[in-house]
Length: 336
Image (cartoon, rainbow, N blue to C red; front, side, top):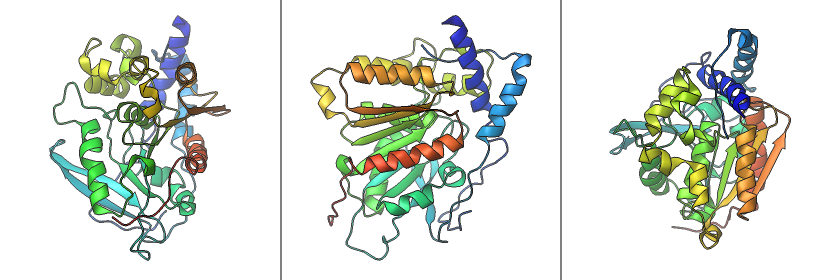
């Protein structure tokens, strides 16, 4: 187990510290319309540098830009009282949204990973193409490097409260949504996979379907000792969750939350979709989480297949999630 942790940490550090160095995100303007174009974590050895370079090259590779109309998306800012700043988010609307004024639509929230931003899913995958076959409003929030949690150390970094208490109500107010759990799903990759699972467990009344693609499920349990001198990973985890004994860690630890679920309240949980590549450094914790879901008889689907922690896999995973969503998302249009 000691050696497994060392190997896992090595991969985690390099996959998260460098993934977006080749692509600096541009700040959004409002509105913008454009044509598309047990557990981880380890100290690094110089002999492993070639492997790290390979990971960096893989994770920064961009999927072929999507084919989409000029007005395929809009960027907005929400003036957040909780975050004390303006928070950007991107919205993809169904193709018939502006034509069918009396129709309302389900909403899918897509969360990005560590070092990423709200426009990642658009830039790095073909999500704009895939959702054309589904009448979903897709919302991509900004999560910075905040682990979708209310920070233990920075009072204005309330990412969890912002998404749950400000962004979702704003979306339901501003767009023709079907504002109920039966028509609301959330999914994400890596850090966003962790965030999605946590939201599904903590707010089951808000989501009927949750997806995690190569999620960092043990994020809130990672300690400074385990992470070592790992730059952005160590800094962001410590900023978000604080010291090992902090209340923030306990309330955001997915495995601890799972232990509190009783047979009585499991019926209220959303359906969980979890997948991970067999060569991904996070496969062990994803399997452990799947085992826990199975033991507690919580409805879920777990998939593992050849692949690493990169956008080629994330792009393929979201296709599978969208296909699965047809079984769990109601699409009956009702007028508000």
